[in-house]
Every structure is written in structure tokens, then in C-alpha cells.
Length: 152
View 1 (cartoon, rainbow, N blue to C red):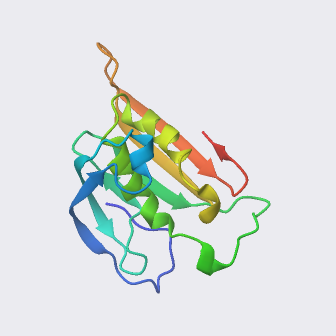
View 2: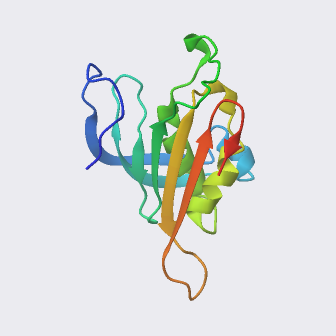
């Protein structure tokens, strides 16, 4: 069970369901060398922004994004130029499905391909199974965007 860190006046999210995602669509094509395919992820959808704050893929990759309030606060451009942070997770899930390796670690590489200046500050948490042969356990990443730099 999850909850968005948002206003109570925001409309109730649509319940989690499976979504088909095109691997390599949009910006991911150049990151993946033009590989195109189909991936799936399960996540709820925010009807106001059309995106999501949490998702899970059959590979075991789980991503969650939270609003961040850095101190000192970053200067935001006009709201009509910002993209919803809700688009980040579906795009990452789509692109990560086309990469081999440890999915949570791959997410950091993929974030570098985003035009991060178009997003308000956020914190992204990613968890995946270890992909190293003979190694069990999980890989966990935390990435933060404060409008000046992406840190992990």
C-alpha cells in the first residue's frame, strides 16, 4: 500500500493495473541504441497529471518518486514550462526494460538522459534484484534532483 505525498484535494488515483510500455519510445530510443520492444509495469495513475509515483515491473524493479523540498529551495521556472514528475517512472520503466544489468543501477544512467531542468525537485528510490552471478540480495538506489544537481 502506498500514499502520495500530495494535497488532500487532489483527485483519488486510479487503482494499480498493468500498463504496456514501448521500450525505446521517446527519449529512450537514443539511450537504447534504437532497440524497440514492449515492456510491462504495474502502477496506479494520477488522473490530474496522468503519471504515477510508484511502479513495479515483472523483472522485480520497483521505483518510487517523492516530491523534494531542498534547503535552500531552488528557483522554479513558470509552472507551464515544468513537466509532471509523474512521467518519470513510466519512462524509466520503459527504458530500463531494454537494458541488461542491474536495473536499479541502470536507472541512474537513464536519469542522466532526462532534461532534468524541466522537473521540480524530487527524490527517486529504486530497488531491484542483484544481477551479478552467484550473488543474492537487492540493489537499492536513491537519487535526488534539487534543480542544480543530480546526486546518488
